Length: 604
Image 1 (cartoon, helix red, strand yellow):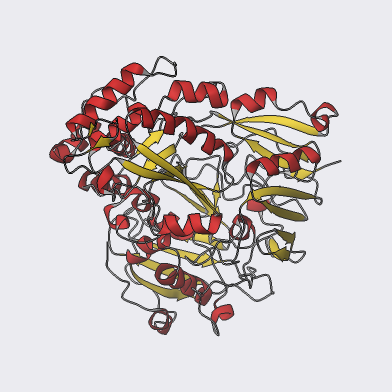
Image 2: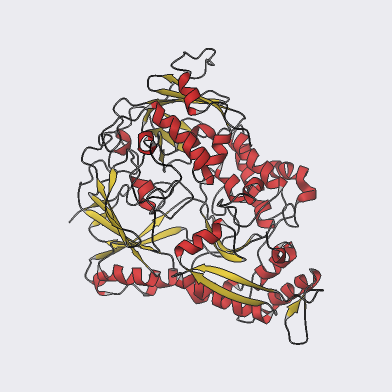
């Protein structure tokens, strides 16, 4: 996992255009690549299934965001960049079809080549590919981007780079990567790496935060912006890929604009007033009773529900297990019992949305809620000594009677805390054998009003146990910095999951990531079983082993009690300006990446 590539960019380019000998017979260039099996679309496909090739062009869409930004480079650790910059101004070698679990088609690359073992991948660039300044996208740009991201970029790029044994220019427009180990996902991961212009960074450091936009080859370029307040992305009239089949019916707006505010409630008011054009409603109760304002009544706003087939992921309050207070699983289990889900859900959302029961619930990848059987049990068996109760036997979240008192679960929580050495003193404060009080702080992002309401209910329950809890709300910059440094006790976590979990799992809960700054392993997970099961995902020979590895991983994650799970919605609730339209044919992933603004359009 820590091997470094043997060839630097200069060395790789020095290899020149030498022909590659001994290429396996099964390897041949293709228009796309799937994690398992073959791509669903033929080489001559006209457009992605969920895009409308006849969509009108023009108009704009305005989004509202909470927080701010102080950088325009979204690929480095320093600074906070707007979401849309990476999404819309930079392209990748391959593009994802969100109507398939994990299939990629050529974008900057006209073809991708690998073999049955997937121990290498080769990309051939399109001759017409251009950056926004008109310069060609070259093999040198690809190789520099891979190395810069892998060594100086955000930590999420480092793991894949460490698995590259060599990279070399294999033709005038081709680049080949050879891998150090078996990892079926690596060819796809490299296909999704952003490709930047090397020349832009010849005279400045790549990893320094800057308000100079990165030069990409995407459909949009950065227009006017005011740090922390707004940014406009405008359609590049000379975009090289405007006639590419993959993009037919995509990127239809002339402008995509983001306005920033300090609080989600303010964003909603701006939407009601017509200043913001789209609003994702995460609260089922508000969806039912808060959309009778004038613009809805007049027909200026449309409410759309978008179903999806993706896993629930994990949304909840996460423990930082690096803290001694949360190192004992019984303490974490006690605090899960103290969270009165049924009462909180009824109070906050009307109890409409179901609870998240595991990291991959709502999908075939989710664990069964009973004893492990078959292939899943076989995968868990070598790690039985390392597993917490529930991983093999089956784990269920506690259920309350919905009353404020939540007596049965609070009694269970008290018993678990006593087992872990925490008892109330004469004044009711929970203390351990050293007399140390049980106290911690819940860190929240400023403006997260709904999460604050949830936490307020939870804090009252914890105080009844004798736990002293404070809440701290900080601005977006401080919040990001503290998460990067793991400077918190408990905080809100959202981990979206796809139908093709892979290398990102190392960053979410791989042991190595726990000791590295700015990874997404904010809970501090360090488990040989988790590491082995992630490896199983990446090396599975077929769909059956892949699903079993995901279900086994799901069991271990739930048994570790890393988070207090909340709820998920099987539909996305979108309120939007009626002039904003989307295709009738919805992608498998629903309202997720690749949907809005990509396949939407403006129509009077």
